[in-house]
Length: 159
Image 1 (cartoon, rainbow, N blue to C red):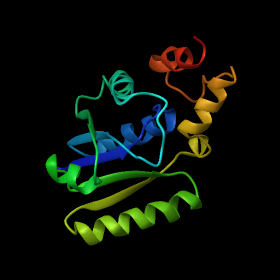
Image 2: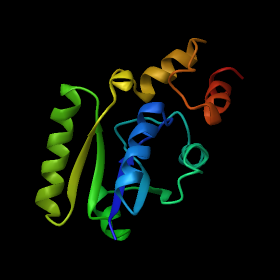
Image 3: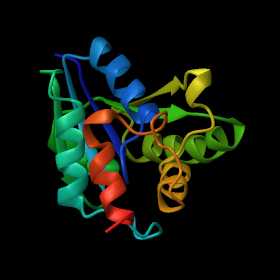
């Protein structure tokens, strides 16, 4: 059985994230989408809110499970039996950062491979930060945030 773990902050999940999830779910028998606590990033949405949003947008993907973890990604991967880490790359700057992470993970866990998904061009500019900035300034996030969670994101900024 091929099991993969896709770690990230998903604060909130965007069409770019969803694209990677959909593509990875076709390659692996089980895909764990792991909301990882990152102390370098301050979250807008709670882990519970992010989990709820991810579960809404992946509800039609039976082999996708949403989890939350803290600590090292490789520890979470081992916990769930994942032999693959899924990562998305939008630009060269992402690659440099992801290469550092993948190399460190490879040194610590040779049995776990990192698989990179190149983002579709229409999502290459898209990040959760960009989507949040647009929402915060009352812009149209239709092309950034999946419909199932769009109102939840907008409510965060327009109470």
